[in-house]
Length: 438
Image 1 (cartoon, rainbow, N blue to C red):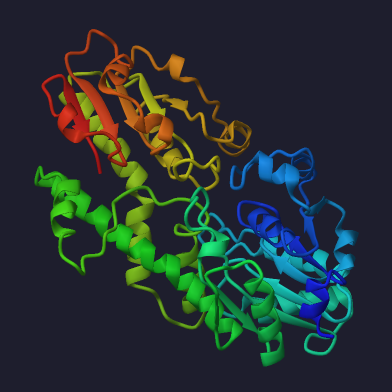
Image 2 (image 1 turned 120 degrees about the vertical axis):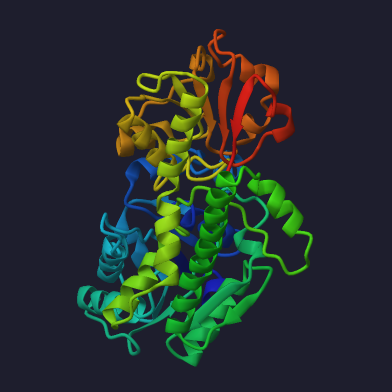
């Protein structure tokens, strides 16, 4: 009997190493079909899961309460599983070089608890070669086992989109790969248990790693183009959204929008690819150009706000500015690698200390990472300017009367920045508003 059959019959377990925005939904999905051990180093997070609380908002408290996942912070529990999925983040350092600390740490912990006959599948986004050249030696060293003899490896890049209730693990085609045909077949069949959209069998682990890293690089470049267009059209006094709506009527026009590019994927993955390229002697031109544009958008937004304050005859220093939204994307509590912080810090350079409001964000995380304490909507009064930075549902529901109440009544012109274009622009193209959007 092979490993897949044993897993299906409940004779062997699957483990998930890393229970964040990606790993936890995977564990929950598999637990509907097979026995699952969910491991994370964060004991506080594990306690929340055990108590039926979903801090990620990815599947909801009710699903967590009823899931059969065996949540644990005890790494020795990994010895009970034979099929392991590693889903830990792969961030970048301040100098934009890959930070492989999480995936290396996960490999060490898993290696210390690896048993003969296991299959290890990495999901973390990496440059081609990391799985075989960095992770495998760690697994071998810590376990004393030999890859290809005592255990096998595969790679299946995550494609979960945090906060997206439509494109889920089950509905997105899953790329799978393995070190040999037997491993590939096992990995494919295990994922087919939960992925209704089916799997795509990549011809090698490196091909699968490369496929993932270029998906987000392509998106990053396209958004950078939109951001550059926005800067050009602002100089021409043309509304970018109106231009894109018109151009979008052509069947082959790619419908991307300008915006802040943060999070753990689009703003990070391109640096993994360019890092490896530079190791091999090739200096990226298009990819890094796009990254520079996107990384500078927070500064551009802040500078645009300052210009509008001046146009409205409002003193810049000590201006009362509210930033609505702080997460890296809408309807998601995650503040890690948010680019709204760039706006906040740049405004600080002009002597402005913004009031930040985000009812959807993880307030504790924001305080820990950025030293920022959130205010409430009730604190948004007597403002000189308001920035709607994230398209949370709560902010999309705001009407003109509610928004007008945010401002100091003495202002004849209200400075309003709608970065994502969530409001009806025509409503605010009036004498009493200075409305700006990307």
